[in-house]
Length: 231
Image (cartoon, rainbow, N blue to C red; front, side, top):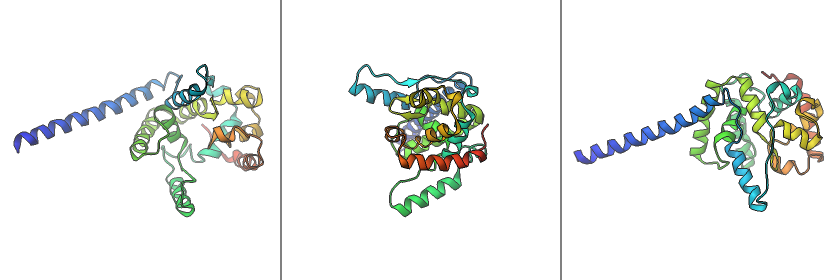
């Protein structure tokens, strides 16, 4: 039994070291992005591969712009729509998660996620869209890293530059130019609200940006924007 026990301990030790090294890899990138701007995220790569299956020459529409070059209206609209407590929480909105669970149980299917902007950013930067317990656990760990290393302004800046706003459209600048032919800094409050309502399902909603449902939803977001706290 002793040789078997020793072998088991060694295997366990190796596995623990591998997990630590893997998490260190994630942490290293988070620290790097405190100073450098991400060019391509895991989610962008996934979408680009999908587009190139249909058109090998397909490219993403994306252009990084600094925080100051993004309309304050869009910042408020996104916070109001996606994460009202963004400036208050430390990565997780436990009340929002509880409400989402209750809503899903009531509907008998997943209709709400309760993910914060920080959680969404963790997924977009590193992970796939698969909803497995391991992926959710890894998302939570990366979320803690983001909140520990980056301030809220940087988290929101990166999020606004990498989030998907339509098929092949990533980031606020590309979205503003794609839908309104203007730079992100010039977005009005109403335009910002209309962009924010696309986020839950950008590839579907992006095909019908002026639908009655999205127009009504954008008015709700517009009413919440004045109370949205942004860094």
